[in-house]
Image 1: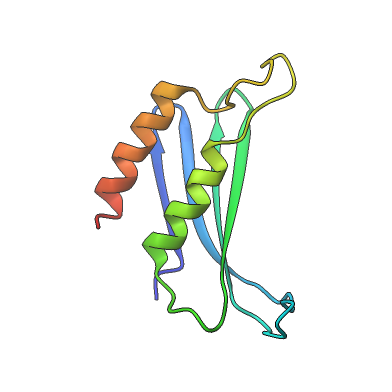
Image 2: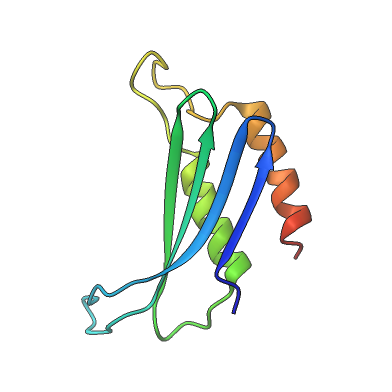
Length: 105
C-alpha cells in the first residue's frame, strides 16, 4: 500500500501522506485511514486538506489523495489575501497537472 507521495511545482512542495485515523464514527466503526495533503510555498503560506477512508471502504491512495488535495487547494486566506485562494490559480493548475503525472488514473 502506498503511504506517501511528495512532488514539487514551482515554489510549492506538495506532500500527501496516509495516517492512522483512530476516531470512532457515529455508526460505531473504529479506525480507518486519514489522507492528508499539504501544499507549502516558499512565501511561507501553507494549506492542508484531509479525507477519511472508513474501515468498510476499499482504500484507494489516488482517490483519497485527490480528495484531500482538492480540499487543501480550495482553502482561502483571511490575512492580506482578502478572502482569495491561498494557492494562486496558476500554481493550482500546475499542481493538478503534476499530480496527474505522478499519480495517473
